[in-house]
Amino acid sequence: MIRVAQVVEAVEGGCKKHVLELATGLDPARFQQTVIHSCRRDSGFPEAIDDATGGAVETIPWNVLRRFCPLLDVQGYFYLGRLFREGDHDIIHCHSAKAGLVGRLASRRLRAARVYTPHCFPFRMEDDPLAMVLYRRLEAMAGQWTDRLVAVAPSEAELAREMQIVPPDRVRVIENGIDPDVFAVDVDPAAKRAQLGLAPEDRVLVSVGALRPQKGHRYLIEALPEVVQRHPGAHLLIAGAVGEDGGMADLAERLQVGRHVHLLGARSDIPALLGIADCFVLPSLWEGGPYALLEAMAAGAPVVASRIPGVTDWVKEGQTGHLAEPASPASLARAIDRALVETGLSRHMAAAAREMVRRRNTRDRWLADMAALYEELAGATSARS
Image 1 (cartoon, rainbow, N blue to C red):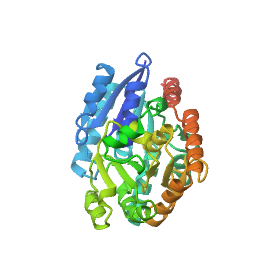
Image 2: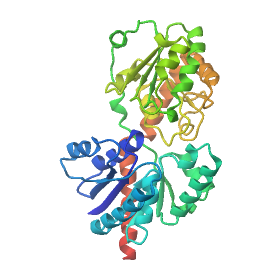
Image 3: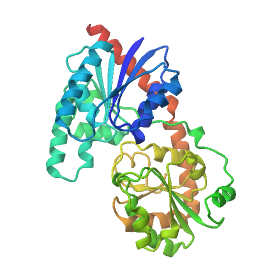
Image 4: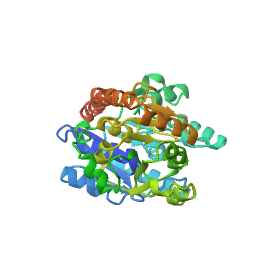
């Protein structure tokens, strides 16, 4: 039995999904898992794990904040160190920047193998040059206590090597995976559109993601006046919880496209929404390996997405979708217009993207690769003991 500690502060979005899938998807006969998670974010996270595993995976709350907080961070360092010693883990897998730094620091003298998945490096999220330099140095410092850095997309691995975060031979690419059958649903387009108050002839744009600055919804709404001018029946559906980037409804009203923007909030019918999409739009400013993109591709929705690392690994211009420059409403509007006008090309690219995901990004493949990595590292750890 291989004992694995999953350590995570960012219990939301793709990081949450990633850890939840590991906790519930790995074979419990081979892996005994403990999830150490922030108690400051999603209060329902441990219950979701308990429900899915019947209590087979232990969950332990950790009092930690995303931002730098000296007192809590020092307390969290000693708290994790105690948990790691008591658990006698074979693998300590830290996810995202905060848990990645504190978790690897707290485990650096233990026998356990240390794994780090950035889910997008923090220096990619900063505009402040000094903050970027600081984060890069912290990542490089923690890299010396890292047995494997797992990149969820090839571009993330390239960045880790380029920035010398860890030695090149310690970087492993294990791309995110989904169950494509979940998103290949039969949906009655007319009935679903009617449920949403849309006419059969309307052109439906769908974007999935919490309303926060990273996701770039502001630029998508700013692109909408130009899109509506070309396509008067265009409607934008945004499915995602309201986060830090509120005011989107007000912005749409100021731009006189309020009736074309539908803020749906968090939804449980994402596959059906993707099933009626004439175009899926991902206007993010940064990403690691976005699940929403893979899900849209699996659903067969034509894709328009930002030209950023973590997206261009899957979206190839004119082959599996259209790319737009990040934070550029004009570029987004042009790409969306092309997707809506060139319907034959859009269908062809959507079919190619769906086949790519089914071949390359299945949940079963991802879980098998993660299990193989854990077994490899556990074996090496045992040999050193």
